[in-house]
Image 1 (cartoon, rainbow, N blue to C red):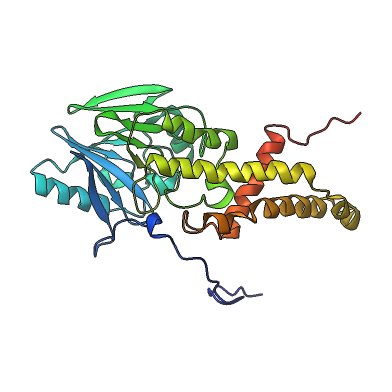
Image 2 (cartoon, rainbow, N blue to C red):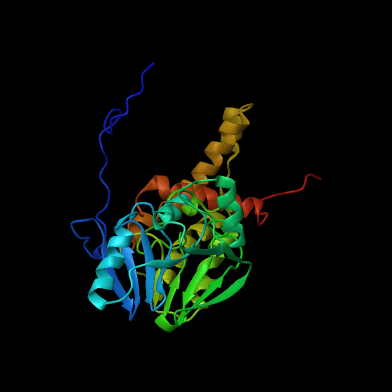
Amino acid sequence: MTTDTSATGAFALRDFAPVPESSLGPVVNELGYYVGRIERNLYWVTDGVYQCGFVTTPDGVILLDAPATIGHNIQRAIDEIASANDVSNKVTYLIHSHHHADHASASSLFGTDVVRIGHEETRKLMLRDNDPNRPPPEETFQDQRTLEIGGERIELGWHGSNHSPDNSYIYVPNHDTLMLVDVINVGWVPIYSLNLAVDVPGYIAAPEIALGYEWTHLISGHMGRLGSRDDVALHQQFVGEIADNLRQVFTTFDPTEYYQKYWPNMWASVSEHLDEVARRACAPLAAKYAGRIAAADIDSFVVSTAVWILESLRLDLGLGIQVHP
């Protein structure tokens, strides 16, 4: 048996709704990156899909995450800024938002002469993964830690699991900026299963925690532009509407026909039942959010996110769970 690996082997490529201009960011340069000033000596770098940040100081550069897809362009972006401002281009500190390889695998490019900092769970998970591209942080924190480096203040916070068990808030108060990765995809819907969230209630609560900080600029780790407080509110509205629709559909929809038709194949019954609830909950979203948030018409992202939220409503919050008499 052979498997067709061509993009069009099984079906014609589909068309999707246009991406709103508001969801796009600056055009990257010929090397594939954009670097811009956020405030004073705090900068951000993007390749259009991933983001990181850095602060220049008299004691060297503080790097905030090291995404693999930006890779060597991180140092190129730092070199560009350092040359223009006559400051050091040497990365001396690297702060990890969490342990995932896509946001951390360029860490190894900066060698061993770097102080790596992250949540204590980030260290545990990186030690477990044993990935040479992701040396575990030597310095850790549990709930809160304030760093004073080269005259800059950076506040690290962990408020419980959300996207991952260790995902942390990186707050740079003197630059009016918060970094929270893999929760809000600025201007875009979450990808599969609510951005692959390991803790759905924690993920849904995270934006409100983020809004509890005082900031104007958000480094979200993904997509091509910085975020605002309005972007967080739009994300909350979109996810909240999925959850509200699911509650309404799940508690009023009669799935009897699925369980009669497919018995004794319970998995077929459950799959058809819950998938149909998710599809109905998501049906109004593409039209309602057209022009406001990108990819609302990509069913594989939106419906899988709805299924994941539905399972959390059932299993975490007890929706529809009945005790046999």
